[in-house]
Length: 417
Image: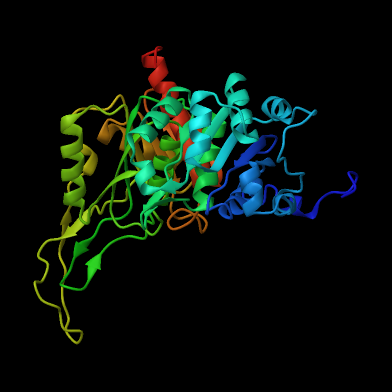
């Protein structure tokens, strides 16, 4: 295509978000049966604002035409490294490399410094420049479980490579949802492994209180905010536990999760987890019911009857934390009139739970918040009463900024963190 003409595929750039605007991302593709999913991954990164450059191994180019990736990204696909020493140019110009899918062979080559294909060569060069490198393994389950692969994984992790785990299904390590791959890589690209070594506990979703055998009281929380916090923490290297009620978003397979139904069960699970360890960060993003049905019927109530349901207060889940985390974050969703009332509500919540940070959001403004990918939030610092207004943002962006605040607080208290 004429270099003066803009490729029409570039029109999707930044249509989802501008998080990766100004970033060149190299996408390395190796010869896996899941290779076709790399096309959607490339487009997913572009929708987040990235300028995506693709390089294929020779074996990969036999499975899929390099022209398809040129169509998808608007740029020439690299299959061989020649006199233009493309691996050096990419390593210098791009902010990071995502190898997806990554075969056992290429992962071993990256881990042990073997540079006989353009993907491994570029990965090793990027690591040498201190750039971000992430991989999505794809292989048979038996290979993924082998001690040899365990050594490869450990070596890659020690080199600062983020491994986005595959889904294990039908005897194979399968490529995850391309949207999720792009989401995780974005968090890693923008922050690196700045939470590596930290333990993070997150709560998410709505709880239920049963009225009878088929009906219950709940709220419209989708759990998205808590799940986004868990994904962001994982992408940045943290060890993550997620306690969740009912959620209407998918929980990634690589997040260690504990499903519960009632507020009491959520409180008990928090108590159990915080009894055995001290978390660095606890994020109470769930929407547990403040009230429960006092006497639920053990039968199905007849639809032609009139009934009175008595509600009583439920336990406060964050009060069940046994070993206090270094940073405790709570959420305050309230009906308010203006920012002044919103801040007052947040500070009251901070006092009630001993929270260090409170994420305040008005539930009576706009159509965002519950069950939306967007929310209007203010992060309040309890110790000073100062705050940062994020305005209306995607929840993954809110999650990133929230963990930024938590990390800054941790570092102020322990500079070695």
